[in-house]
Image 1 (cartoon, helix red, strand yellow):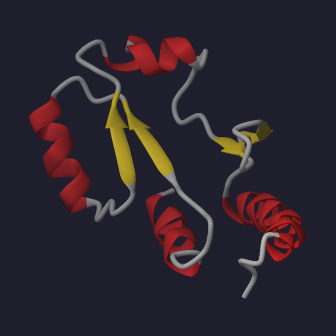
Image 2 (cartoon, rainbow, N blue to C red):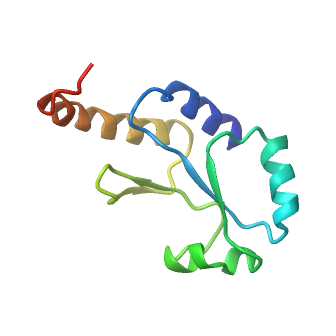
Image 3 (cartoon, one colour):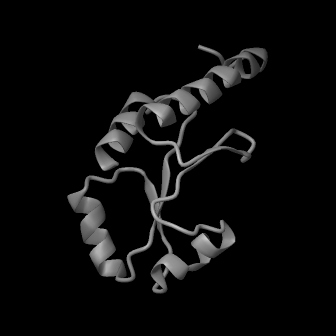
Length: 109
């Protein structure tokens, strides 16, 4: 998934988009090395020493890894478990929904 996520981040780097990861590695030092090796340039949070049973996955009721949530600008989950082209489609649709709102506030391009 990392190559696709890198391309999505690159494509949307100047827009109102953020990719956020949660990593379940139990070894924080190993995690830092892996993020560098995989060229993870987006924000990635550590789920703690309990790995998949850490506080973030508990709060979000994550039952399996990877789990993908796509949230809108209001923080509402709009899609779950979308990958690849399906993820791109959902993200692009959400960004298109935002254009009228940003135009009204005078921040449209």
